Image (cartoon, rainbow, N blue to C red; front, side, top):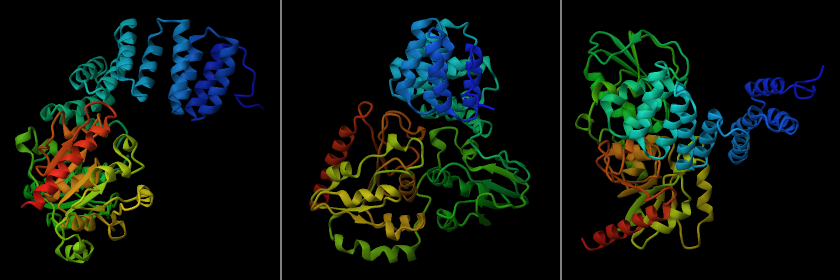
Length: 461
């Protein structure tokens, strides 16, 4: 018996169905090969050209997908679905204005009853930083399909960027329905933020290290509402959370435990923060004195120099890290100044960049001494400043109340809001933003100038 790709198919619809089946099985290369042959046989079939573009997009070969969609539109300029697919792939290529036009064209060609078209438009608008318009598009998608949980989640993110917390948090709960959280049976019933005296509450871990550190500010408030508190926490963060003294027990994520109530940790802001004025302040974490003392010899030689920690990349497994991370050489160029001693707080594969610095440009590598975030907190306690791209250490430094300068890309995390150089979440934080997409030279130039002023102030004080 021959496979679907080997069997000759004489009908365009059957070919499309075979390719669709292969796509569902994740066999994108085979599906694309089948469609490339079919397009030769049926050159004016829009669905085949469109499907081939879908295969290329699934393989992240976005430019190839663009040509497939454009060829399909040459055959039929009124194919609204193809316009929307083209908009999606242009968004991936960061051609955001063009993507928005494609989605608007798709909607104008449809009966305006397809919620997916409005969802796709909203995504491109959000990526372009047009969050007010994105909220309108997502809201239209939800109006057409009330259980459109993905659109509700995306609307939450745009509302959060705009600082509309009261409206955003209910939508933020949609993450529980979109497949973003692992399926698991949790003990008891879902907590609604009410006092729970005499009962046991489990706070369930979710998302990344930065999110866990950001949320930790709420733990004392949760404990103050009553009963027994169990907190799920990854081992790298457990010593820091234990030091807060609010948990009756800390357990590894996924550990079986009895509880009357449960809540995902990132739901806590919805109970306590409806506006900026109700954000719990920082600092709310502290370094263990013993660990601080152990770190002291690493910083003894700096003298009166400004001790500056740097981090140039978040986790390399995070999908959007490539849009946040920068080369170490950029930090070296901006921050290796007379009167500054640089310390690397970087962990993971990007550390190898330390070996490729120019001669005369040493940076003290602290990675061998940083076994968990409590060690990192102890190191930060010795520093005057941390300069870094957006990752968990920025949250940690802000939570410790230490000065931190965070270098943001054009499309920043919602927590940093819009057009602000400060953060209501971390008073010790300063945000540096580009003038336009990819304008990192401007960001590093600003950082370098401000750092020179700081050194000058230190030397003359």
